[in-house]
Length: 292
Image (tube, rainbow, N blue to C red; front, top):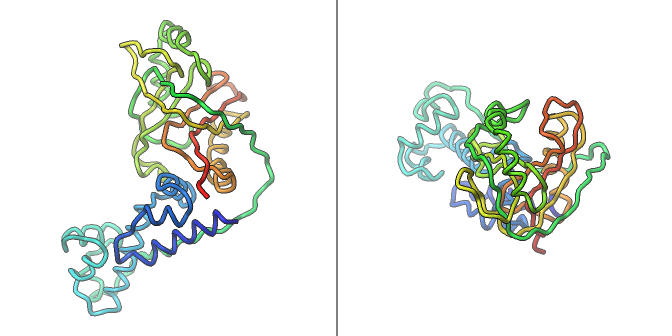
């Protein structure tokens, strides 16, 4: 498939420029997508941020250079983008567990992170129910909190947000709702770079989608006009959601002709009662057509 060849072409470019400046705009051009989409897709497929992959590859090659060549530590540091021997030594020891000065004298065990290439794996033929929705600008109004990223189970910080909503808060938010998705929604944005390693934080909203002004007691997030891919998830909470979310990035995006656009990921539930064994959800992700 073309998307796979394009992605691997971007990976080839990155590999060939590890001792130079890696221009992510050029990598995205070779992948035939935006820089934002390339970074997001890489994180979901590889499980680490693209910047972290580049850092690990450079430190892997730096270890090889120190083992096999006669290069000075400072020369290797500069080669792989470090402005000082101290900065290089800290990064090297953080990855390999020893300082670069010990590589030759002690014959230590070092870590090697191999070059990544992506291959297509055909899995079960389960259908994904989705639709594309064009939306004018709107805003998300409600509670906002910076919460830790958590994949499995119920996030206690988000659960605490729900519990802090009074009946009056819920009624006021529902009255503001005047665009899809209707009623109460959740939205996540401003993810830390280490999202796929389950590190860092994100901005989480519990509120409503509206074109009305934001009351003073609530936070507001303006969302620009965009196309949205809307995916249906029906089943036990939260396993079904996590499964569909993973398939969106590993299966749907690579073959859809769309790429992820900047904006919040929105979750709508038929019921916010997480104790219910089976319920219906919709995952809303902003998208744009890939340039050809």
